[in-house]
Structure formats: structure tokens, C-alpha cells
Length: 173
Image (cartoon, rainbow, N blue to C red; front, top):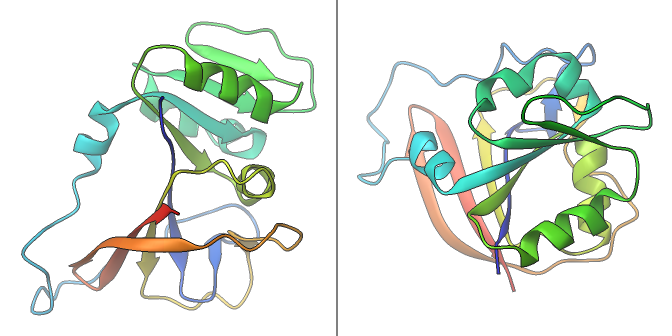
């Protein structure tokens, strides 16, 4: 069965974007002295993905343009006609993606935002969590994790340090 993989960057205080949705703060710094030997390769992750799921705010910020070779599901309450590789899902996104999991293909990536991730957390259907901790404290913004979901125990599979960014890869137990 295809895995659902959450892949997001987060500030040390838990935000995935500024209050206005911007994310220019997602960067490391020019010091590799603490880098681990193993390094994160986003392109390799994308090679193993053929579906990307994102919220409407991500779509409105043109984040879908990064994934032209993938099928993109956009969770939205608006009625929008599908086009090209983009499918708008106004119905239960969890059920739609669970159906996709049963079909042959590569893994499925949850790209954002926090409300979409919370929906998947409540259903406890995320198999892998890849979180890049960015060395910044924003003080306010759009959170990655909301309340209202059950506790989910995770197992740390890998950690990577890359120019001040710590990438944590957890598996759902």
C-alpha cells in the first residue's frame, strides 16, 4: 500500500508560515561544522512520490507549480473545476486519499498547510513525518500542529543536520 508522507519545514516555535503565509525564513546558515554525513535529498523524495496533497492557501500561493509532473489534490471548500494535473477536492479528502492509497503507484506527500495536516492527524493516517526544524523563532504565524487530534506515538528513524537545519524523520508506530 502507498504511504502517506508529511514533509514540511517548521520554525522552532512550531510555525510553517508567517501570519501572511510567507516562508522566506525557511533557510539555514553558512556553517556546516555540525552537518551529519548523511544529507537530506528532497529530489530523491520527490522521485518516490506521484501524488501531492495541499490546502487551498498553498494552491493560491502557486506552490502547486513545483509539482507539474505529479497529480495534485487541493483540499478546498470552493467549487473549482479540475484542470491539467490538479484535482480539487471539496469532499472528504481523507477518503479520497485512502482510495488512492489502494491503487498502484508511488507514495503520497502531504505538503501543507496546518489545517490539512490536522485533518490527517485526526484520522491517524500519516505513515511518515519529515520535519525540517528551521533555526528561527517566529513568535507568530500559521501553526503546523493544531489541537483536537489523538496522541500519536512515533519512532525516530533518522536525523540529519544540514547548515543549522535539523531534519527529523519519524515513522508512525
